[in-house]
Image (cartoon, rainbow, N blue to C red):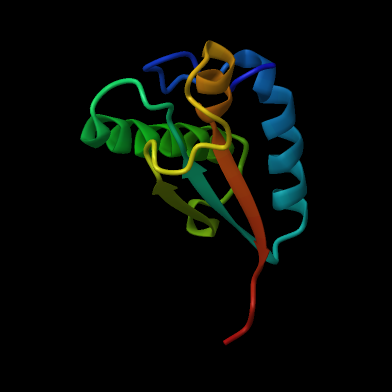
Length: 111
């Protein structure tokens, strides 16, 4: 049961670099996609603080992807704070699962 972030941290754990490297490679190769990066936190700490923390986590992932040649114009960033847990925060493993960033890959639509 891994998480991409330690408590109160915005540093992406090295164990997730390989996954993000593969994603960046695909996105760079196939130009007709955009990424929406959404940060999340557990419920430890004040709600307003967690909202900012979730946004900083999304920014950290975006910066990492940009360092792998993903065009920043193709990245959208959002933070959901503690508002969308995927499991209960009543255990450490639950809080760990909720400290995450979700990345949505979407096709570019011509408007």
